[in-house]
Length: 69
Length: 133
Image (cartoon, chains in turn orange, green):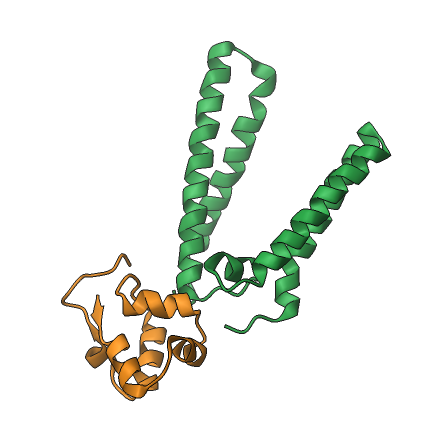
């Protein structure tokens, strides 16, 4: 699944570690989400969207299959 | 994720406790020297697990008992693979023992996968999935 997490993070000036701390996940998970290797659960997707003051459908694009899960 | 010392201690304490039980069994059968040797290995293992649990890695988070949803999924898949490999190895051993007609050694290769199968079916019957993973 393609997403705009990296774009949103760089626009907000946050580091991966800061995003990880805000979402209560590991930095490796943030890296996996950004690279499209991991598709987050619905609750985590909502947390990501809220963190960047956006919506789930703007952050994630289900049309493009990119990850493993 | 923030790891508390309490959760980080669980796996090492369990490893040390299990190692002590094994060491006690070894001590009863082979004497105090065997107890000291096995206990030494168990304590070294427990210290290794404690150090690993403090590392900022996927494995560290799992040992610390505080994985996030991706690490939890990873652990679930690793467990499933481990179970499948164990079942396959057990089936091969059972087949070899059947061909050799060694009836005395067969039971562990029937009982242990049997317990696994009961647990698997029990979890399916329970049928509830919670969490956000």
